[in-house]
Amino acid sequence: MYFILKKNTVIKALACIPVLALIMLIGAGLTAGNSVETAASDNNWGLSFNSDSGIPVGNASSAELKKYDALYLGDTGQKKIYLTFDAGYENGYTPQILDTLKKHNVKAAFFLVGNYIQSSPELVKRMVNEGHTVGNHTMTHPDMAAISDKESFKKELEGLEALYKEATGQEMKKLYRPPQGKFSIENLKMAKSMGYHTIFWSLAYVDWYNDDQPTREEAFDKLIPRIHSGAVVLLHSTSETNCMILDELLTKWEEMGYTFGDISELAAAS
Image (cartoon, rainbow, N blue to C red; front, side, top):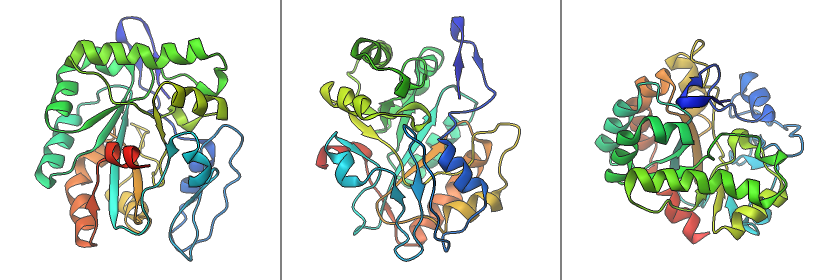
């Protein structure tokens, strides 16, 4: 979770904490071979993992999400991965992450908040220049499910759009990731009315605690067995572990026969 203070000061206690259901699921150390049901509460994005298909099931189906131009999964008939990063501040690892993505010719999506664009415009421009997508993670990273009026909702997204255009000279692509995975049907409708696709995820792990980073082995135990066709992967670019393992991780996924897709193209085709 990010707390945005005046003059771009950020309390880096927690980095974009995903939803409670996902924390409980991953924190239990469950492997892909288990069949797990999550008790996802209202307004929280949650997943369950089915041992038969290996494809996680969201607490809203792909068909239901599609009504609102939202998604969490690509085509499960193709061995393709859509790599995304969330970032509320720059922790010093993005340059190496970008170097690794370039080495593997992978185009990722970076969902950023207002503080990031204000404090690291050169990195934002590098993302764009190297063919990555910058998505909207809101201006101040609030609980968007608690916002019911459209003007307040629009302010969070349009504020970030303005910062992005100021930094890059370009219009922001209409891809939105709700902070902490918190959402409501009304939020999805409002995002759609603004021309946005809402992007959830089908694979993530606990990578956001700066003072309690997973080991290489712990990361691979989650990210290798659970990878699946059409996966929308959420990582945090604030994670030292992700920075250190990314080259090896992408290599392992490639050796498993996966290729990497562009989340913008997936959203456009959905």
